[in-house]
Length: 84
Image 1: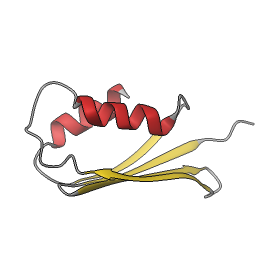
Image 2 (image 1 turned 90 degrees about the vertical axis):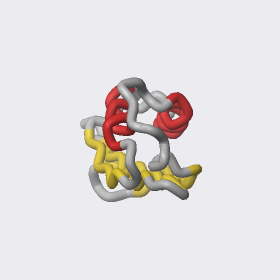
Image 3 (image 1 turned 135 degrees about the horizontal axis):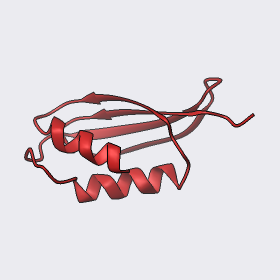
Image 4 (image 1 turned 180 degrees about the vertical axis):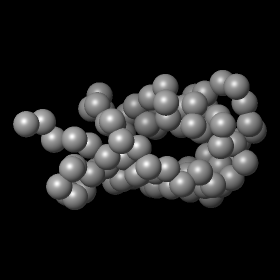
């Protein structure tokens, strides 16, 4: 049976934390990067954050994402996560 992955994101203005877990609670990867919570609300994805997500997930299928959306660009960050 394939391991199901869970991505936890804490996106704020000063920093963003990414944690990738297996379904049995094993931490697979962790990263802290620049904050994306101060970007302007937009109908487009956030290109830098999209690249961070794609690189961090490294082509792995992540069906479950839990995200704390700090800052003022919740719509843009949500769209970016969905596209990644």
